[in-house]
Image (cartoon, rainbow, N blue to C red; front, side, top):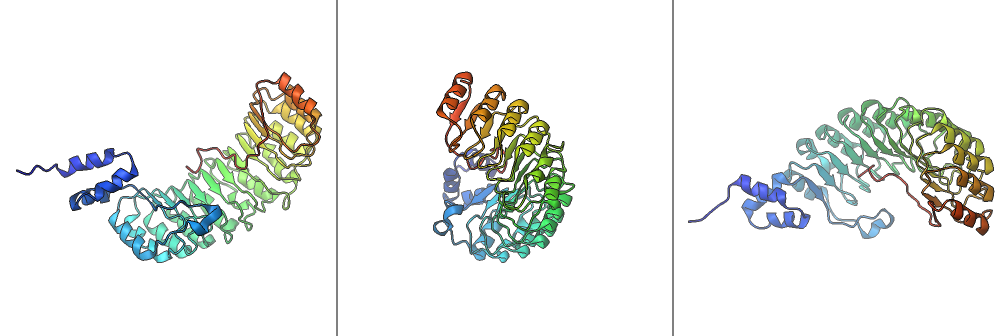
Amino acid sequence: MEFCLPDDCLTFIFKKLDSSTDRDSFGLTCHRFLQIQNPNRKSLEFGCSFSRSNLSETTINIDSFILDKLIKRFTNLNSLNLCGCVNLQDSGLIQLTNHGSKLHSLYLDCCFNITDSGLSHIALGCQFLSSISLYRCPITDKGLHHLSKSCSSLKDINLEWCSLVTDTGISAITANCRHLRAVKISHCDKIKGVGFTGCSKTLSCLEADSCKIDPEGITGILSGGGLEYLNVSCLSWCIYGDGLRSIGGGFGKNIRVLDFRVCRSVDDETVIEISKGCPVLQEWNLSLCSEIGVLGWEAIGGYCRNLEKLHVNGCRGFCDRGLMGLRNGCRKLLILYVSRCRKVSELGIELFKVARGDVEIKAEEVMCIMPKHFFR
């Protein structure tokens, strides 16, 4: 007599499998096991070692026909990762209108053929989407308007290198997605920042590396009052230091991590204002900020009482007196990243080490300091 486990027992066994390899193998056992696997699969990620720096070797040939079949097969997906599917067309996302209601996360990095039309399919079927990555997708403000109207639960949005997006699209997102938590707009040179005006206080993370943010835009970015991490690095060519001074004017009181790397026009007055106005600041990257002098470094020592990490690599105004200012203050400082600072002597470093043995001095230069809990 043949013994067969009921479907609910097989489903329980499938859900207990830890590795993706085991879960994939489960469906290859027989047709019945395959039927158990299909509705219980929660994530789909294609086997590519996707790398933004070397895309040519990592792209995969997933076209609209294949994706259409997969979405019909796995109807209860929570997460869908299509990064590097450069041949994927808008039509490949049509099935999401029927089977995307349970999708929470969608990754479309370097899907160069996904346009506003593709976003309209996502908007129609993925109303409960909370995270979307559109890195280098040729989408516009129109697509973001449709997306934000239907997917109001969005929390994390990656728009890096979406060069057609302007503040109009950002305004639609901030107006319709009131639970917004993290946004990336790095290298979006048409965004000035004013689109963030009136954003929700839930917005706590913004990456705006190499953007043309203006002073009014900085004020808009801070308007929600809940920002904890802000990256405005590489702004030396489009904004003056006084435009960043408003960060210390009250709306930046919750900021814990600031990245000003290569903001060459940031001066002492800006640093003093921010040091006074950001009392919970824990990490500050000022690498290659060449206009900061002794007064700025002393202000950091005197006012940044919760600072744990400070990056001063390549700061030509950082000297022994500035190092002494940090030595006499910043009682919670744990790591000082310092290299290529010609005005700092070996004696100054040694005196700092003697007085502050609790601080680790590192010569390395860190390129990304965004807290790990964002964009997981």
